[in-house]
Length: 277
Image (tube, rainbow, N blue to C red):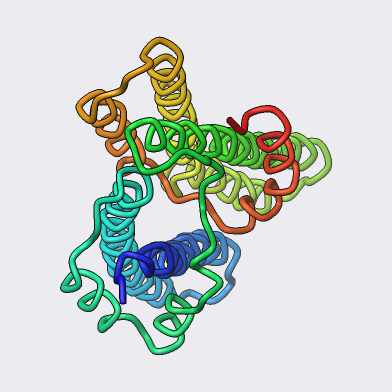
């Protein structure tokens, strides 16, 4: 039995675990933000309680981030091996596959070994070769480029919505509310909301998605140029493109599953109609 055929299922399983912990991290950040807002308006003098809850939640966020980074790193490593297997025909060791399978929870392990994951992932029809590898990289970077741009646009809309809502609420409050205490409390809450854009990671997340999309676009251009200007491709040429793409992808943020499934029908149709070689 060829263990390499399970690689794609293992990649999906590790990314699934990384994204789940990443969701927990964002939930913790949101909880801390809500606690900070609640402490401003609370009439009960319990600042120590709010501080303790925020501290504990912050510790959980750090632990969840550690696990998310760990599983993302493993997923990226397996994905690199899968790309070498699918593109160049290089098999992965049985030890690697068995070790990763053994560490997965039972449900994920069963999903990773289902026959459905054995369906070809890339659309290239070329046999295992440097040409097929570059075609796979072109396709992968094209998808990453558009998914990253979609996420960057959504995060930017969220940032703008929070800023506009905060400013509008402050203006309305200053013009309609006479109580100085209420105005001060609401002003503090709005300042916390704006600060959350930075402390909660939204601004950085937007920048990270922008960088990931730009990096994927460069990889796509490099792959297209190699395919267009070199009839005979060498492995070293492929590795130059792969290496840059792996660095970009490893340092970039995770792309949520929901944006993938939301964008998949349109992107899939465009790729098959216009880009499949």
